[in-house]
Structure formats: C-alpha cells, structure tokens
Image (cartoon, rainbow, N blue to C red; front, side, top):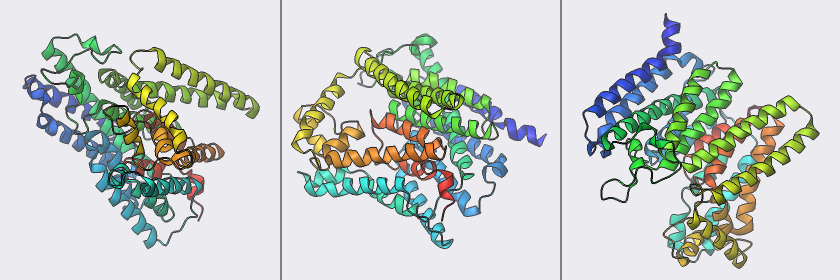
Amino acid sequence: MRAIVKNHFWWSGMLLLACATAYTLSLLNEENLWELHSFKGLVYLAGGITAAEVFLKRKNLFANLSFVEGVIGVVAAAISTTYVYKFKLNLGLSIALLLLCLGYGLYKRNFYKPHPIMLALFCFSAVKLVSVLWAPDKAAALEHIDDYWLFIFLPIVSSFYRPKAVALRTFIYLPFISSLLLLLLTVIDYVFLMKHIGKPLTSFLTLDKTYLGLYGNTALATYYQPIRWSYTFHPSKVAWGFLVIWTMACWLWREERGKTISAVQLLVYALLLFVVMLVLQARVALLGTLIIVGFFGWVTLMKWIGKPRLIAIFTLSAFAMGSWLTKELIATNSFFKDEGRAQINEATLSHFIEHPLIGGGAGYETQMIHQLNIDLKTLHNDFLSALADQGILGLGLLLLFHALVVVYGLKHRYLLGIYVLLAFAIFNSTEGVMGYPICIPFFLYCLIPPAIKTEK
C-alpha cells in the first residue's frame, strides 16, 4: 500500500490541484483573472504537493548523499524551480548555493583540478567584466554586465565542490514535478479564459500572436493571461524554463530507465508543455523543441549506426540540413520572422569591423541599437552581444566554452551537458540568459561529466 501511494501520489496531487484550480477560477470574473493575488493560493498548493512528493521519494532522491549535499541539491533545484515563477529570487538563491558549495568543499578539504569547461567560462566572464574599462559610457556599462561576477566565482567554487552523479535526481526531479503542476494550472486557466471571452478551446492551434487580440484598452496581448500566476510573466522565458527542465527529465528517464521519472510522467509533461507553448505562442520554445527532439533522434540513430566514419558523415549532413531548415523557417514563416531583430543583427555584423578584436566595450550593443531608433536594450542574442561588446576575443571564448562541453560530453558519453547547453544556446540566440543567475545551478550540476567529478 505504501509503495502504491509513493509511486502514484503525483496523480493524486495533479487531481487535487486541478479541482482546486477549477473551483477557484469558477469564482472569478474575467477582471479577477488578471490579478496576480488570485493565483497565490494555487501556487502555494503546487509547492506543497511538490514538497510532499519529494518527501515520499526521499530515499531514492537523497540516496548516498550527506545531509549538507541534500540541502545543496534542494537549493540548486529551487533556483530552476522558481525561475518560471519569480526569476528575481534566483540571485539570492544562487549566492546561497555558491556559499554552501564552497563552505562544504573547504570543510571536506576537497580540491579538484580546474576543469577546462570552467576555465573557459571564467575567461569569458572576466573579459565581460573587464570590458567596462573600454566602454564609452562606464555607468551604463556597469549596469549592462548583469551578474557575470557570479560566473567568476562559479569556476572557483567548482574546484572545491562538484555534485555527485546521484545528486542529479534531486536537481532534476524537484523542478520537474513542480513544473508539471504549473503546466496543469496554466492549461486549466486557459480553459476558463476561453470561457470568459467566448472563444473556442482550439484557438491555441495557430501560429499567430494576435489570435486572442489585446486585453481591454491595454497594449498587453490576451494570451499572456494563462501565466498570470507568474511574477516572471514573460511567455518566452516561462516556456523556455519548462522546456529546459523537460530536456533534463528526458535524459534522466533514459539514463535510469524510468526509476525516478516514469514514461507516463514524461508523456503527460510533454503534452501539457506542447499545449502551453502554443497557448503562449512561444516561438523560441517551439523552435527549440523541434531542434532538441531532432537531436534526441540523432543520438538514437548514431548509437544504432556505431561506426565513427558514418557518424561523422551523418552528423555533418544533419547539422547542415538542420541549419538550413531553421534559417528557411525563420526567413519565410511570418510567425518566426522578426524584421526588427533581423535589422539589428545585420547592424551588429556591419559595426563589428569598427572594433573587431575586443569590441566596443560593455553596453556598446545598446548604443548601437539606439542609433537605429529601435526601443531595445540588448540584441537578444548573447553570441552577437559578445561580438559587439567584446569582439572576436569575447565571441571566441564563448564558443570555446560551448565546444568544450560538447567535446568532453562526447568523450565521456555524457550527453546531459550537451542537452542542457543546447537548450541554453537556443534561448541565448533569441532572448539571452547568459550572465543571469539561472545559469549557475545548471552549469554546476550538468556540464562536467561525472567521470571527471571523481578525479581529485
């Protein structure tokens, strides 16, 4: 009986949240649906259900971990969990995570040889920070470098503490369950929204950001409402946050063959995620899903082929075909096409020759954008931002960081780092989270292969 409750509690939790959400929203009018406080109780309920689920599976999730390692895992998981709810919480939690890891590593007298992946990240972050010195506007430059100072400390901390492979269960499962519940909340909220505005439930089956129009006399698109429970309240960020967690969950499911995350859980999550991405018209997440699923298929095919020469040929062919299809989709499809961003991307490449080696300094991209009379502060592309602000040096170090993750992942047959970095690279090419605290737990837990983590 106890085993049945433990293994199937998540179904009961989803049913409880579904009933609570339906009852709560049935009491609200359309105006109340746009008020954040209307959803606080439901979010807290989702948090309570997540905590209960983790408690029931504590023996599996915290197996072979000390108490402090378990606490570190929960803090790291809390960062990825809270990103979709309130991303501003990530900074304080990331500082706490780094201090806990450093303190525990010093207490255990651990020291790991600095890993090349972390060294590349350290060098890139250092160049980002130092580029303030040659920026035209020092005050604006300081505001522009985000939280890259954390990225200086992350490689240092990783020399004293590296999570065990078993700690990935906690890091992945906790945000997976929480996100599963929030996805359900979003879908039910969408159903009630459609009821209030008199639209068919299938309205989300479109690639058109105007499919629900604007809310009242505001400039806010109505399709934002289903994530009114979130302080983050940004369709692309919320959808991407759900996507990167699903990506990790797929790896854990295949790695453990369903021991921690079942195939049914993964399928339910995928279906809800697909609906939510369409509801939010999150084109970055939709395109990213196609790329990631395609990469999953490529990995399966390469394992079946097995011959290095054929793998190299198939890989180059798949990369060329995938790049071409992605380019064509963005260039020809009105939903994915963005003339404004295309304009500033072209401007970046043309201005690049003015400061080719070290760029124009931190914040130079903003100055360049404003010269085009475009109301944006960043290029929404971390690769082009590095090229504009830090030149060939900055972009080269950023690409080196990505390349090392791929090289060591393939060398040690550790694909989690590649999966996670791919999800980040997709978002960094269109929105950008590099330099933000959300990266800290993912980079600490996922990028260095476990085989390397055992070397002291």
